[in-house]
Length: 195
Image 1 (cartoon, rainbow, N blue to C red):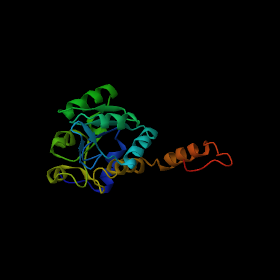
Image 2: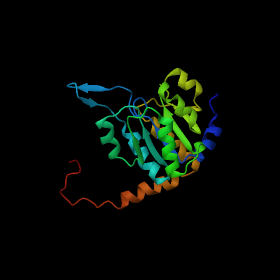
Image 3: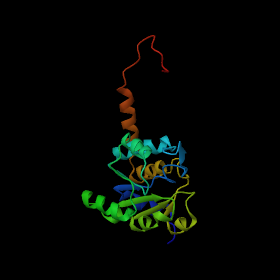
């Protein structure tokens, strides 16, 4: 499969109603830190978190499907507007098909972002298969698109921004951010701006 040109990529993005994301290597750099043998730490990029709020503004559903199970992942994605969180999933395509049935979403309306060989079946299932720039070489070979940004550094945000661009919705997104700022209650005199 050859990578799409920019125009074809943006055309495909216009149809995307569900963005499915892997965690380790896509929303994190892929590193896992174990503390005292039973606790785990991961670093997430705030830009990817912001992308999930933007997705809500443009009626884009977000699904997180990961092979591992982690309390850290559960905590992170209960803080964000994620529509589906599926952990401990060995058959990612099966989990995606369940979500598709619930939402009446066709394969061509899905974009998937992955980084490693376990993501290959899902990359091939989705209407738009995307690999992160630091993903496995064999995954990059078959991807429809490759992000400029590596996993854990804003790759999901890059794709959501591309969807906003392809749909011509930047004015709506920016207007929403401006209107939320105008609703902020001004500080009273003497209040410290930095808490």
